[in-house]
Amino acid sequence: ANVLFERFKDWAPSQMQMLFNEDFVTEEGHRLLSECEAVVGMHPDEATDAIIELAMRYNKPWMVCPCCVFPRTFNRLLNGNKAVRTYEDLCEYIQSIDPGNVQEVTLDFEGRNKVYYWLPKGYTTKHSG
Image (tube, rainbow, N blue to C red):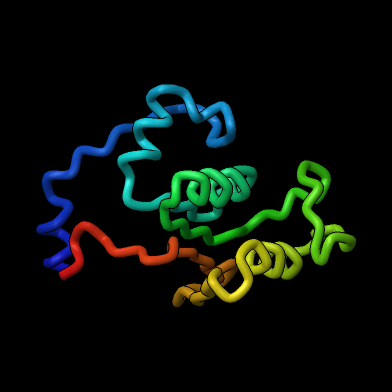
């Protein structure tokens, strides 16, 4: 914990109050996505797909801990023909985005605690080594 504290003690995050979707990629959004190390969503609801799509477009690692499915809002399909309707379907859908490369981890708390993440091929952090 002390290592993380030292790393982030001088961090001054900024906040943009807008939907995280295609409209996010304004000049400022483009700069943030280009400069960030990863795109993360903890129970991101409607932003789940945008987190994954935009992170992959910018070749950035992503992590999502999905919660709500929104089957009437999104036309997600499993295997090209089965509608994503349940949490389990959504988890399978996320893993199918890049089969074998989307990883799953379970967090140590009750409820919707599955985390899915993806790293670009050859990814190394600025802080590794």
